Amino acid sequence: MATTASESHTANPETRQNSSEEWLLLRIGAIPRNSLGWFRCGVGFYNKKDYSKAIECFEKAVELDPMNYNAFQIMARACIAVNRKDDAIAALKQSVMLDNPSDWQLLIELTSNKE
Image 1 (cartoon, helix red, strand yellow):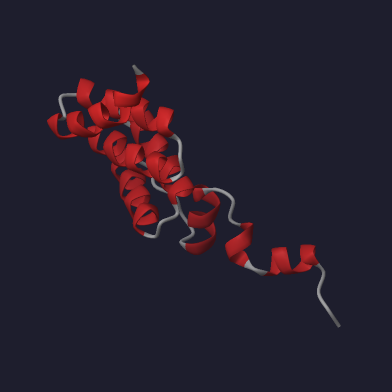
Image 2 (cartoon, helix red, strand yellow):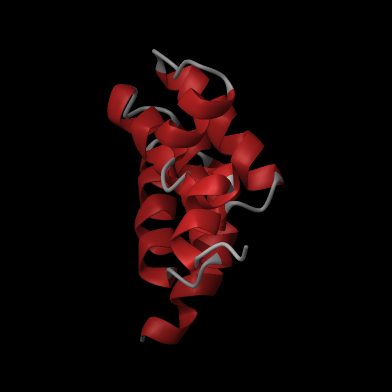
């Protein structure tokens, strides 16, 4: 007997996990409780090339610690990977405002077309 599209969708856990929280709860049974935990989860998703989940995690990290320029930095790179250039620029601006000198170059390169 053939399965319907909705049955195969619910049978495959990979397709059911729409958010980083859902993925973490299903796979690990917990979610981070602090900025560093969310940041490290974001790096994990980024390394897996799951940029949408990575961005969610970085957003949670900076919500808990607005001074976490590393989260802004890698969030910008994840935004670039999914063609969210304006969001990448906003994240890089936050990073450089927090005195992270390494993001100036990428920020200038991304904004060079904005003139």
